[in-house]
Image (cartoon, rainbow, N blue to C red; front, side, top):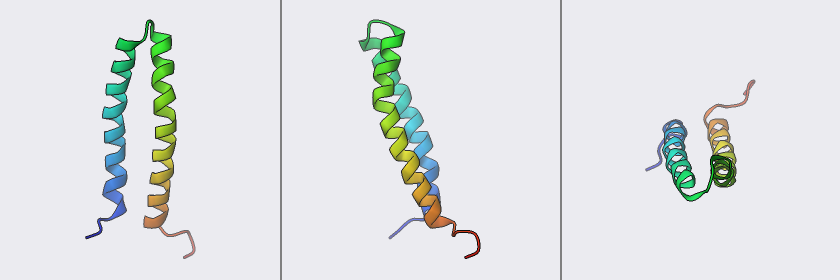
Length: 69
C-alpha cells in the first residue's frame, strides 16, 4: 500500500525538530563551550536538513503538477 506524499512531508519537520533538539543537547554536553557545540551540531544538522529539503521538494513536485498541466 502506498501512502500519499503529503503526510510524509508534514511529518519530516516534526521529526527533524525532535532530532535537532536531541543532537544539540548532546553537543552542548560534549563540547567545552557553546560555540564549539553549535559548530559540531551544525556539521551534522545542515547536510541532513539540506537532504530533507530536497526530498520534501521532490515529494511536493510529485503531488502538485506544474502550472499549465
